Length: 246
Image (cartoon, rainbow, N blue to C red):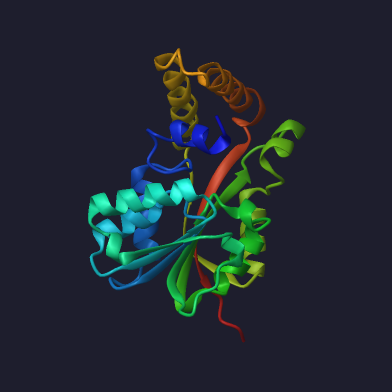
């Protein structure tokens, strides 16, 4: 079983591939989408979960998503067809960092995909190139809420704390107009859901050749969460606008 297949199973019962609940996702989209006929771009859209939520509640909105995964984009197309929003969704299979569009977007979002750009600030630089005047960026990335262990840094990346992250974002020319720091409940729900779902799949499919691998992976990931980063890792989403220059 490859990593993509395992991720699809693990996320089957979680609404978003990030530690956010439904209310948080809804609130972030409401603050980021400023007009009913907005054009929305998701850089690293995966299965299109953010775009599908926006499209299903805003009948005049149009969206585009970019991702390298053929499988994830196929899921997005199938889900869009089921919701009846496929005519307002365009999907591009390519590296998000290489995407070029002739038209700007009112909202550019990238949640949990900063690795595709090399970090948070490069992600914002990419978003800036697609943003319409007065538009919003919705970005989500990790932060440290406690002193991380060396294992946590090696495993998850070299994040900063909340205040330092905001300092870096504002120094880069952005003004936060809304934000959400994932709660302990959101963070724990995400981990329990992912590794519990993967373990349950393995137990329900004992004759599948990938069952033992999935069960072992679930146990390893659960242990890493509990022992290496549960007390230090956090997740931050920001809704940003460009800061006017003097």
